[in-house]
Length: 513
Image (tube, rainbow, N blue to C red; front, side, top):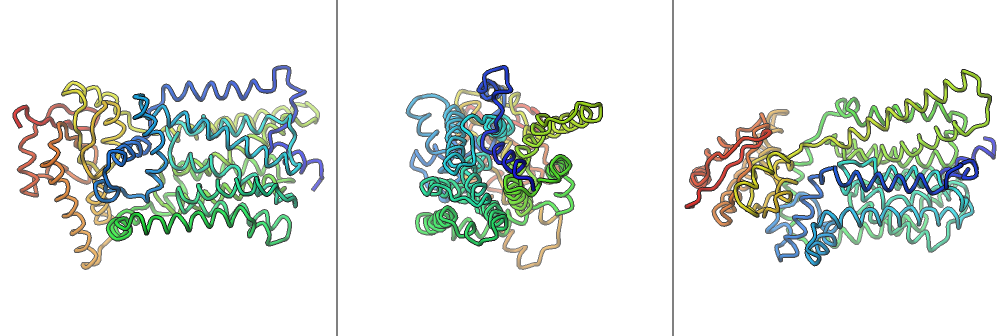
């Protein structure tokens, strides 16, 4: 491949040059992107997983025990992500969500600065390059939309430095050892957040090894550090949280993990077609240099996140964020390079540039829309506020959206051990979609009975002021479910319907109960 094209591609991945072509200050696009991102945070609802993560962290700060008093599905890294903003919120008296946003902005800036330093120290970047940092900033701060602050979002922020190291190694160069250590720590954080995310680290390192025809990038320092951190985390979970291994994990493996969309459905759902369309457009724009080190590493990492998305099998928008963010960074760079290329400005050339620009805009717009898919509980929250200030809340639902972020919006107190009734909902889904072996069915029924008994205990002990009942779930009539168990039915006599709002039936506890 021509050396100048390879160099141009790597420069684009460092921070993209050409500031001298701009009549405006080179930092202005970056400033505008950050300003838009801040404005978006003021209007987009907090995502439900962040909302539950903060609630869980606050309960731990109050002395409750994870996997004993809090029946959480995920390993403890989910709670760890939100413990600092929860603590800052408590110390300051401000909403913890403010500190999540602030820390994510700061982490994004630190990640991009580290990535640029990695490339600069390796001699693959130009101090005056600004395009990629602007494009990547947009991918980190604007593209997530409702997925902002999710585990996948934070994982990608931590992943950027190790991606930069892989790009350097793919060029046959050796990164600064201190930067390799920092990148390895970022890679370790990425894998700890979700072990599935070891796959993109491996993919990026493998492509770097293919580029230089050596195994060294695979067994490089940063990868050993990431692997060591993941192993240490696994040991920590076993030692410090034995209840997760003995009590939670068997239920998760039996109920939650099998809840997955069929692979053909995943392949035709929104995320994968957007990813494929981006790859096709990149190939059309860069077919001669598509396998250049810079593009190949980005594509490999994005493919690794795609594999993680398919492995999880849920098809949720936020889980597709890392794969789409990386592929859109590559696509944006390819389009920018096409527009900057000094070819003739005949009608055909203008048409090609316009077509690629419009296609990219469409893909980006659809991706932002996909990331922003959510259920708005604003109306239901307004109704709950009329019942009493700071109500104690529980929910009967197969989905987290019923209780969160509504509970935090009304400054309520979540009093259930379950964030949603994922055992009952999951078992019902499995029964409807596949025949169950009798022995497995008995084990699942035991899990459901235990969940129902724990819910009954929580209501009797905590006496929630409000119970939110999901009326949009056509698989389960939750009131019939509650009345089928006499002890729970007895507790439910203290509650009466208050209002049905956007598919949530709001039950209020009697004033004398």
